[in-house]
Image (cartoon, rainbow, N blue to C red; front, side, top):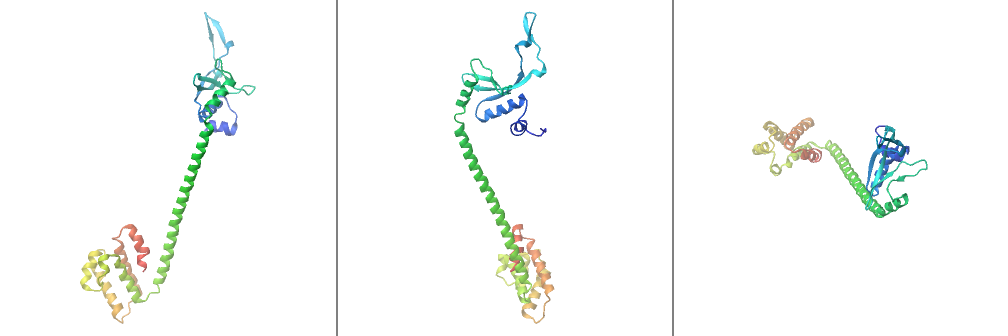
Length: 266
């Protein structure tokens, strides 16, 4: 047995061999499990022949190899009863109590453990409920994690689908998309973003967007909507990036996720 193993557990389930300390330790725990008061006791075994008469009294020398371990069980009207749990050569244990033999001890134990079957049933019932709750908790966690995974997958599918669709936008549709980015703000939703009078309103709402960029946006929009002049797509993408970064800088984290992966795609 390694130093990391539990001595009683190893004795009961692995080696099944041991010394008096193993028998006594295991017995004390098992009796307590059955609801019987027990305690582990250590001392020395002294035999009558160990005593010698000296100077008017009997004395005995007790060597170290006479050390021993046993248990004591407590019963009403009897008190603590010493029981040597280490079996002898005939595989029997011995009760050390005046007027109490092994058969009477078994009767006392039977009386004290008469309610053990109902106790065990209650334990099994509680274990059953605990198992159900553990299974329910596990199922809830699996459903929760599964729901998050499905949501993320659907968002990614939506993101790449819309991103791919955006590549087929015409110049006017692309400009519509850029102007739509500002509609996340209620104060900008119903105003004409191309009107020069609203430059200050836009800048006040989105301070990260410079006045020069707002003027450039209005100029490009005028060209796209009302001029035969062709605005290059790379200019629109650059303008879109400036607007997105400015708007995102003012939004809280969760709104940034919504804005970037859902709102910006329309």
